[in-house]
Length: 49
Length: 227
Image (cartoon, rainbow over all chains, first blue to last red; front, side):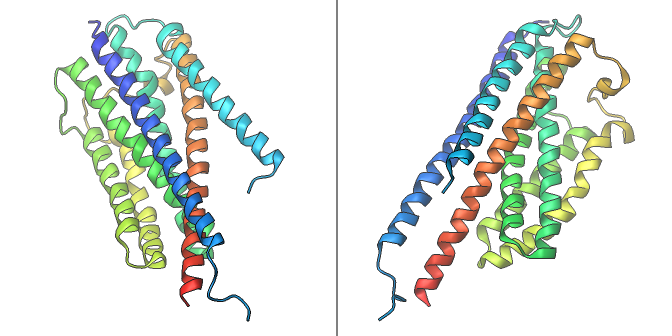
C-alpha cells in the first residue's frame, strides 16, 4: 500500500496552510503599521494650546 | 521598535526555524525507514503527531494566559492567549485534515465518529468559538473576559482528547511512542519534527502576539483622540 498521492496531498496542504497563515500575519502587520503611521502623522485634538 | 540585538535574535530564531523545518522534511521523507505494512503513507505520522502536540501546547498556553489575564488584567497575557488560540486552531485544523486523509488511506474512509476523532473535532469547535467571541464582542474588555473564561473551561477537552485512546475503544492507533513500539530511527525523525513544529509555533505566536498588542495600542490611540 504505497498511496503516494495521499502523502503528497498532506505535505502540500500542511505547507499551503502554514504559508497562508504567515501571509495573513504579514498583511495584517503592514495594515497596522500604516494605520499607526497615519495616526502619528495626523494632528491630535488633544494638542496643547 | 526593536533594537539591533532584538532584531538579530529574531533573525536567528527565524533562521533556526527555517533550518529545522528543512531538517524535519528530510527526516520524515528520506531518513525515516518505510513502514513494513502501511508503506510510504505512514510518513504522514511525522507531521500529524507534531501538529497535534503543538495544538495541545497552544491550548495549554491559552489556558495559562487566560488565568493570568483574569488575575492581572494585563493586555499582554490576553494577547498571548488570543494569539496562541489562533495558532492552535490553525494547527488543529491541520490535525483534522491530515488525520482524515490518513484515515482514507489506512481505513478507506474519510471520517468516522470514533472517540479520538470526535473529541478532537469538539476541541476545534471550542477554540473556533473562542476566536468568534473575540471577533464579535462589542467591547474589547468584554471579549477578553468572556474568551478567557472559554479558554480556561475549554482546556478540559485537551486531556479528554489525549486520553481518548485509553478511555474508549477507538480505531485510532494507540500511543506506540511511549511503549517502545517505534524503531529508533523513526523515533529520531519524529523528535526532530516535534522540535521543528514547536519552534514554528513559538515564531508564529510571537509574531501574532506583537500584532495583537499593536492592534490594542492603535485602538487606545483612537479612543484617546475621540475623548
